[in-house]
Figure (cartoon, rainbow, N blue to C red):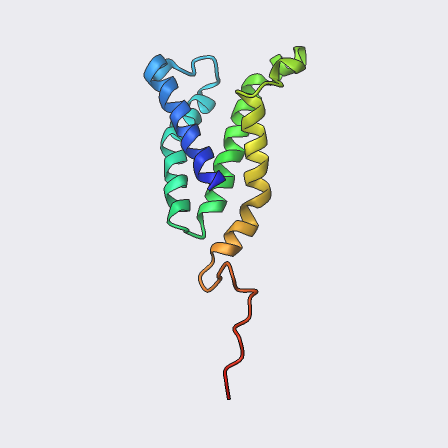
Length: 132
């Protein structure tokens, strides 16, 4: 559920930036990063949908999207972070993107294993013995 909320929030933020800034919303960034940030508007809800549908590939796609998003954001913000590091210790922007990204990267493989066909959340619970 944390994944779904995070990716829907990300889609909402990118949608807001597109609605308020148009196609030039990310003009401060290099063109590849601009394209990535626009693509995230489609990628984030797609990841959320695949997670809701419990697709085993969803966590790996989520990890790839978050890795790209973190690299893009850190690329854009690197010089500013180096000049004023404490500015980025706030609950919006780079810090939550990085924390959520690290969470996704750290949990993607275990979540993928849990979503594999034949795996059940209660798989470790043994059935009671059958009466003889």
